[in-house]
Length: 448
Image 1 (cartoon, rainbow, N blue to C red):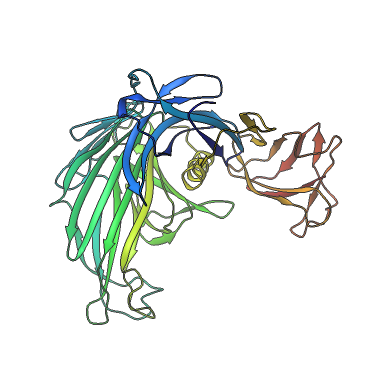
Image 2 (spheres, rainbow, N blue to C red):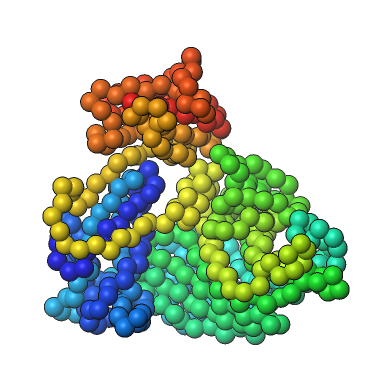
């Protein structure tokens, strides 16, 4: 490996595609001469996202695509300077206020800083209802009430922030294309980045908020939401809960969800079903109607803490528009990927015993998820916990690299205290664990 080496690690037990960001320190590399090499010797250009300095050292932030990264595994890449100008491939690009990749074409409305058009290129369907905006900020005020940290009160004022924003192209591609919008409201400031990545059917949002809204017994409780109206009708809402999901009424009530909410319904033109999954990395409050998803971002309650939210916040969320055939396992998978991004570790050139690419664990089929992997409390075995998301009894397969299991491994189902249960269905076939999981069920297996 020549150049600056980076190890990219996949924490998920399935292969993943993504665009990763690395920082190269104290090297002079012009934007058009950044070269990325894979272990197989393939070469591709890198996209420069940022240049800066930190404590007297300069850096360049480089983005590049990673394809079919091994499950719970890694691959080594190297970033160097090319001897010739690199040619940018087609992928994501931004021009004016339009952003496009292989899957999606969207337009950002400059005045509102929200999306005025979002077309899924796979179906040609327009997801933004006519005359509406998607992904806009909404400020609300609750009337003064007690228990403000625990209860949402009566809404007495509502302002949709659809005017007064500015917009600019932050990144123009080919791997990440971003429109940055900025606005002020009252004493607060909001910067929202809207991005597409090459090879990904999701719209990413990063909200950077300087929140200075103060709640008080004489004023009430200010609150901020982001709103996603969708061009569908008779929507059905699913919410992620621990080890599964639940359907709730689309009545607009504030309810919790873990990493994702999905709203799926009939197309406005009546030609099938479409929907969208909203994922985020740190918020739980959602309110959903038959054609709209709202995510609560900030809320300035005043008791018992008088200033709980004041200051700087960064919130990441993403919208996955989809057609028919999308289920809870798809939503769970994208929620996992969004909350557990590919890990990048800078390293140096050195000798080592491991190969430049390796995997450790994979799980099949797609409706089975790995929720835990640990060393057994007793002995040298491993404990694996799995759950099923689609509501059908399934035989799960967990494939282990030989370095993780012995030459003749044994498997037994155990309870939460890792005690064997009598009706175990677990067995090992070579280095592959097979076990039956009931519909929406959870199983724990000890392998030794």
